[in-house]
Length: 375
Image (cartoon, rainbow, N blue to C red):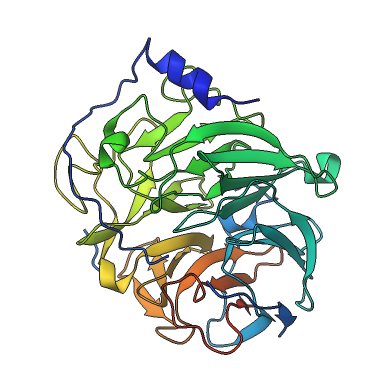
């Protein structure tokens, strides 16, 4: 099924009840986005069980005692856990999906995604595991193809994935790509503006949005506008989503030259890009709850453990900890492992963290890229 084209036709007949503001702005990229190797074992203040990266764990991890699970990866991007505690990790440029044993060890290649067109910030991006995986064995992926970004579902023994949503504009930058199942069992999708900020303020366009879909790629029941996949709008490049124990949703936003953001995501709300960046005090838009200078963050993945939101920073080369009960964000691991892409909570409550030093913007060290575990 290819749904996006049909939705665009629907969108020509009806509009969402969003406040919109158009302002064309130059869209530079603060994110920071290739060598190949063989995997081997080793701030300013202004949950679906099968997807642990989007679920709040009970306790905070000990960041002082990292365990290196895997080294020698090639731009690991998507990370999702299977019910047995092992993990699937996608290599962005190769399009390979590897399975990592529960306690680390030699990764096993379990899938090669067909049709991946890597380049710039595109390639094999987000991964998600169906909440009913024990019954249906389904995995979902967001990747850049020859003409667009798209979402597919597949089983690991099925080499012909089913396209469930396509037509997301691709670009050399700002492809978004994070996907995660929320506590409601729906599939949430972070898209980028593909370096065209006007798309973010166009309610008929799926770029620069957070989408909420069923497992078949259809607009989820209860979305702000019936028949539309759009959950929220006015985003620049969403690569991190997480939910706390109260099912409150957080979205992580790349800024341009000034502010990166952490936002509380609510249905039907507009987060301002490209009209505003960071805290603006403009009643038309939602202000972030945390903002950082872009040199300090360029935030990508996000996960919640206990009452803390963890945000992996690329350009900032650090792991931000954001106390959700109040207090200032703090930086950990600053400069120790280079660019940090994805952070996720495993079924056993440990925090997994991937580096992204082979993405063309980093300075790879021996063993990069790697996955670290904090128990």
